[in-house]
Image (spheres, rainbow, N blue to C red):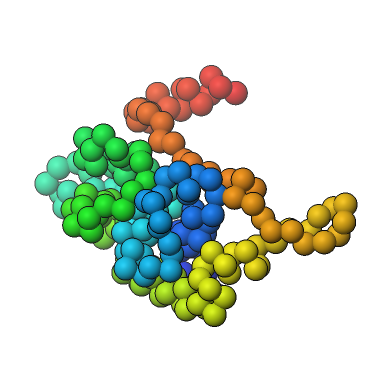
Length: 202
C-alpha cells in the first residue's frame, strides 16, 4: 500500500480519491452518465482518463527545450490544467465530465505531459500509474461484491458520528464536496517584467 500511495508523488492517491469520491455526492449524480456504477469494470478506463482530464492531478510543467547548439534553448510551460479542458481540442463540452471514446484520450490528452517527450520530461511512470489505479479499482470492486456492490459498501462504512447522540449515521451525498478546479487565463512574462511586478507587490 505504501508503494502505491507514494509512487508518483501525490498523483496516484489524488486520482484514486476522485475515482472513489465522484460517484457519491450530488455532483456525481448530476454529471455522471445515468446508472453509472464503479461495479462495471468495463467503464473504468474511460472513467479514470476523464478524471485525469477533468481534475488534472498535475496542473502544469515547466521544462527547457534544448536546441543542441542549433539555436537558443527556450523555457516552455505546459499548462496541463487548461489544455485538458481546451474546447478547441475536446469540443464545446470540454468542461463536462463524460466517458469519451478511449481513442480521444490517446489522441488529445496531455495529462502526462506528453508534449515534453522529446526532452524526456514527460511522466516516466505513466503506464505504471494507470495500471496501479486500474488494479486498485478492480480490487475495490471485488471487495465490495459480498456487500452487494460499491454503493452498499459506501452505506456500510461511510458513516459519521452524531455529536448529540454519539451514534454513527450514514454520510449523505450532500456531505461530500467535489473540488472542481477551474483553469484561469494567464500570460507568461519576460523574467525582468515578472521580477518588477513581484517587487511592486511587496
